[in-house]
Amino acid sequence: MARTGLSKEEVAHARAGLLAQGQYPSVDAVRVALGNTGSKTTIHKYLKELDEEQGSAIAAGGRPSTISDVLHDLVERLAARLRQESDDQLDLARAELAEKELQLAHANRQMESELRTTREQEARLQTELRQQRLAFNIKQDELAQLSKESSRIATELAHTQQSLYEQLTNARKLEQKVEQLQAQQRHTGDLERQLATSIAHNERLGEQVAAMESALAPAQARARELELLLAQAEARAQVQEQMGEQLRAYLDRMAAPK
Image (cartoon, rainbow, N blue to C red):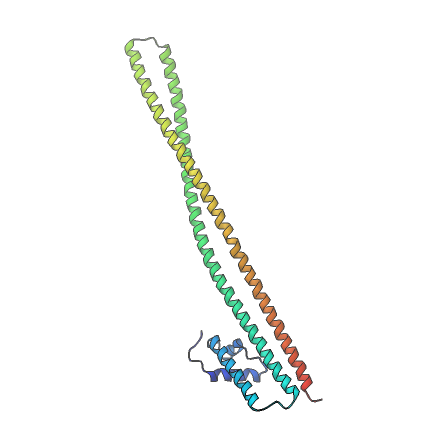
C-alpha cells in the first residue's frame, strides 16, 4: 500500500544503498528498498532529478581524468536509460493488460448474465411449447372423437324412420354436436397459431444465444494478443539489460589497470 509524504532524501538514500550493493536503482528496486511503499510516479520523478543532479555535478567538476572514465560514465547513463525505458514500457504493457483484463471480465460477466437470462427464457418457452403441444394433441383427439360421433349420428339419422318427434329430437342433438365441433375447430386454429408464434420466438432466441457466444471470441483473442505483447516486452527488457551488463563488464575490463 502506497504511503504519502515520501521525501526525495528517502529515495536518494535507497538509491545510494542499491548502488553500493552493485544493483541498478530502478523504480521497482527503490520501492522494494523503501519497504514496498511510495508512489512509483513520485519515485520515478525523484530518481530523474537525482540523475540530473549527478550529471550536473560531474559537468561542474570538469572532465573525467581518462577516456575510460568518460566511456564508463556514458555507458552507465545509457544502461540506466535503457533500463528505465524498459521498465516504463513494461509498466505500460502491464497496465494496459490489466485494463483489458478488467474490461474483458466485465464484458464476460455481462454476456454470461444475458446468456443465462436468454437460456432461462428459452427453457420457459420450451416448457410452454410442450404444454401447448400436449393440449393441441388432446384437442386433436377430442376432434377425432367428435368427428366419429358426428358420423355415427349422421348414419343413424339417415337410417332412422321414426316419428317426426324423434327426428326433430335427433336433429336438435345433431345441431348441438355440430356446434361443439365447430367451436373445437376454432379453438384448435387458435392453438395452431399460438404454436407457430412460440416456435418463431424460440428460433429468434436461439439466434441471439449463438450471436452472444460468437461475440466472446474477439474479446478472448484480444486477451491472448495482449499476453503475447507482454511476454515480448519482458523478453526485450531482459535482452537490453543483459546487453548493458555485458557492455559495462567490457568497459570495466578496458578501464582496469594492466
